Image (cartoon, rainbow, N blue to C red; front, top):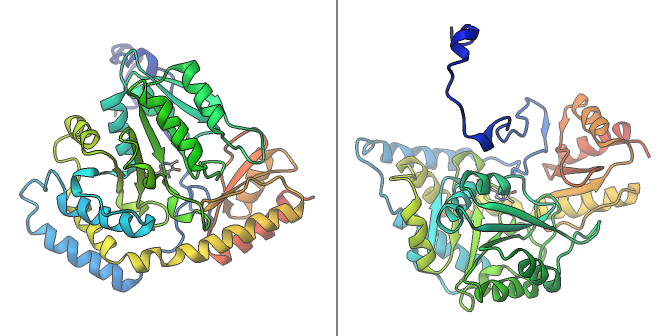
Length: 376
Ligand SMILES: *Cc1c(COP(=O)(O)O)cnc(C)c1O
């Protein structure tokens, strides 16, 4: 009925915001393939015991669904703080220094709402996560980029970051560590330099650590800088290492004044009682959920070594994916892999492809398919 509207009626459709015309929504393909290695999910779902515990928590929350949820989600925020204290060996932050929302995408959107806006600029470093420019656009924040260093390292130095801040005069800088799509983790000297260059302009530094738990031994988290740099926010998510992408739970840790600013722009009761119950239960069972991280890191290193040995250029990865340069045209390789039931991502600089680390079976299927899809 709707699609049958006549041309005359279509001509009266409301006109969308000018800057949104002709744009398309985020859309990594969701295809029914045997080996989905395209959105950096953890391939291991919860055990049936944990699924039952989550179900029980949901049932308990369901009894109170006639009421709005706890607007401040304090219990969950306290639990997330305790987890981070253990994970990154920092003193446990109070609930007031932690904020949670529906995925770290929503957290970042809220940060841009509170600290971006007309006349303000956000700066990122290419190649970067595809969503950053969209948060900026939605909030009428100007989005500018500087380039990361050359392949295959895609490194950033303190000098590069400081120079870009001086040139673009941003209010917000986003540093991603480990970076998506390159996998590169940042040295803390880079993060410190960005925080210092922004502090004098009273700007905000967002360090997106969506893949933080996958970093290699000895690679520090920016969480250790929070005490000395009140203008730094670290964002994390339960979507990747925590194996909980379907629940939609992201969070940040920062000075409580930053959390307060985000509380002003969040929608009322943004985090459902169901989400809070699921996330709190997942946190209580974090040993199981994070139990696959060590295996995934080993598989990641093995995959990177395998790709190098085949002769590909490979970006060193501290995440649960590997970016590599194909021999043949990347779109052809992508399609040839898909024809063999392996879905990866054509993303990053021209000629490069990103593959998520799956189960050993997934990774072996990818390796076999690549032999035919991208012969040496
Ligand atoms: C996957 C990813 C996220 C996480 O998004 P969620 O909304 O938490 O699922 C955030 N940042 C980057 C760079 C990512 O790759």
